[in-house]
Length: 83
Image (cartoon, rainbow, N blue to C red):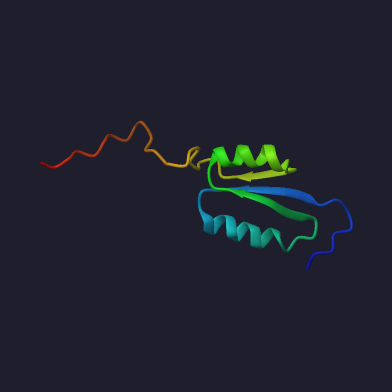
């Protein structure tokens, strides 16, 4: 139920797990003074969405991938090839 009488806070969700974004969006949709204006799956998408949507708040997973293709961290050695 949504019947906000004051200003509505515009929220951008940024997480690389769709189920987390969906869960947060469902929870936030129950609050009359919050509205989800966008979602991002990478840091780059979050920056783009922030610039284009101008949300009041960005709820972001700080450990998500910053590119469309996740890469292993430099400390992980390459997997040896057989043969």
